[in-house]
Image 1: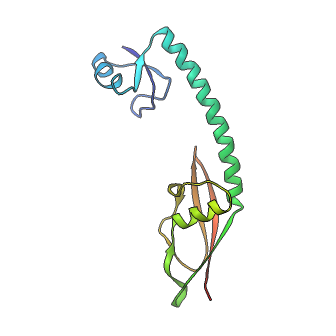
Image 2: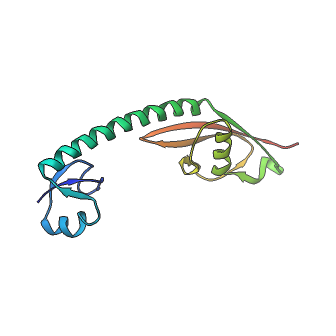
Image 3: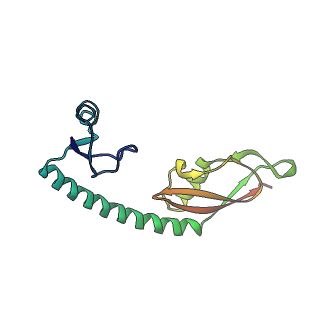
Length: 148
């Protein structure tokens, strides 16, 4: 049975692909979940149009993300926190704090996009990677100094 995929399915293909699957798999799993549709001439034509529109939106989104990545690469965030012996912080700098500081600078980033191996617990300069999607990432420099 020939079908058109409505979603990316790891074992089958990507959106808009026309593939052959067994009838039972299509009727009992793919069609009820809305993951695929029957490959008729009308459905093929409408899916091609949707794929072209989606590609245009992705291109626009990607260019916006590239501009955001360039701006974030230039950004330096400063935090002043209480520190004890050996430059160790009381508490830590978390991804939520970094997200809030980036938003104060006028950029929108989700805290899940901020990649910290572990919270920052020492004074100094720390590069922090931000995954923006579409295989784009940016590095923000976080400077942590002591309150005096």
